[in-house]
Image (cartoon, rainbow, N blue to C red; front, side, top):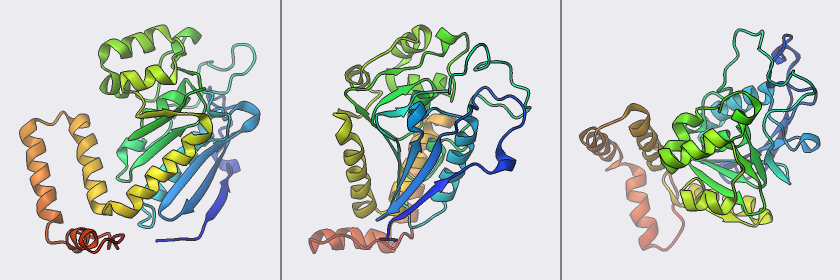
Amino acid sequence: MRSALLTRRIRPREADVPSSHDPLRGDGLTELLTNIADGVATLTLHGPATRNAFTAEVGRQLGAAYRRLDDDSAVRVIVLTGTAPAFCSGAQISAGAQTFAAPNNADFSASPVRPAAFELSTPVIAAVNGHAIGIGMTLALHADIRILAEEGRYAIPQVRFGVAPDAMAHWTLPRLVGTAVAAELLLTGATFSARRALETGLANRCLPAEQVLIAAVEMARDIATNVAPQSAARTKRLLWDAQMTGMSPAEVAARETSDHLRLMGSPDAAEGPRAMTERRAPRWSGHG
């Protein structure tokens, strides 16, 4: 596991920037910053001038970062956040009718971050430390765990702009809050509070904005230190695979049995109980 801090800015390469009109592309691209320390990778949407507005390019970069970090055995947890005072203000709005003009590029997708966070094996925590609007909110729905800022404004308002919710929100949101609440949020596009997000199950916790990232990293470090890597990976995959494929209880039971047979007798299955009885932090091998 790497203990040193790695920081880098992921800037768009010229070849990656589409020449044709893209409704998610703006003049000022938000950067993606990556910090890795003690098994936790923190991805920060960084565009202070636009409150971290989303663009197709940053979507491609985020997907690439997810793939790279999911393949890195030194990374145990990913935290996604934004530069204060916002998490992500949504698609970058341009003047006139250009923001949601019909795209000319054949590869346009309303789900521009692939893989989605829920398709990874690495746990992902969304530290929503401020406003999350539109795709800013729908991307946070991809995370396994969400911590929201009490002061933030939240909405999935695409219907108020003459378009439709994106990033698989019609699938993720009902699974978090139920169909009735999802219908209200998606069909009205109205703003809601962190407190309501917590009450409906959209958020796991809500905290003052300055505490959100601190709490998310603390939780991530706890997972990175105290949870066996393969146990976390297999638990996350079964949790999401069961929803994605509509597995029956019997199919889930079979997968749980298979996971147990794979993990029991492994070095980490011995290390966990040993570390507990010796009252020390476990030293995971990562093999299962």
